[in-house]
Image (cartoon, helix red, strand yellow):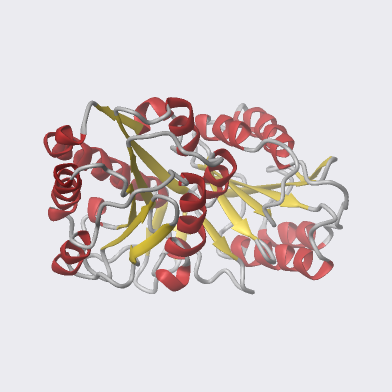
Length: 372
């Protein structure tokens, strides 16, 4: 889950319309390479998109679909909030055309992150709706993809990749979510897309179902919409580096107070820990330090900014070691969440540490602070 903090946490919820099935609640954006070569390849690509989306409950409240294409430049054909019916999206698919040019996938991924998955374009990231991207290409990218992919994944967008014969395996593994062997589908040609569409649609539905189930785990929504979370471990990883302005660091603390105020804090309820980092690491409080909401609030208010360089990757590994140690003292396994509050300007490698955290069944929520 990733969002940009704007002075409150009332929109941080896990909810979905009762009219939607769990596998029909998502914000799904397709990013396709338009340099497909022949009209038949284009028709195969269009049929694939039709088959994938035909069984989805496309509506404003359930599944929202977006469509992008790229070669030299990327363009958004349909925003998440512009095609709110099945018929409207099928019409957008018809707008795909054959475009020659370089494969600037990195720039396309960045445009997708900044525009296609923005709140103004229809993203419901702040409401806990799964964010999913499907990347389709048959050739290597001519620009850098790794850094763009890291930023997209830190916004909690789950990325699937379609490798049609000639794509670069290493680049695709950098683009897709973890684990890459499950997220990349390899096909011999565009002609194989239509036959594969049913299997791929099932893969998407399973991912959506899994994410919704994970978000809902341990939570009951009463009739007023309030959350009664039974047990969970929540860790805050706070960017205290010099790049965070004083007012934005204050926003971080306000955000923490707002989020933790939604839960009942205690040993057999929700437990909260916090680590602040720059190029130094500091445990602000361990997960079992606060026995109630009042103690936790005081601990948050006492946090002072460290300053220094931004080592987010190192901080992820540091907090993971704490999470592993804390788990030894839980009598049973409970949902575990890591909320990373940062401006996104890390000076070290982030993707692999983030993968190590996710591999331990920790759900990462990245929250952009300031201009992130």
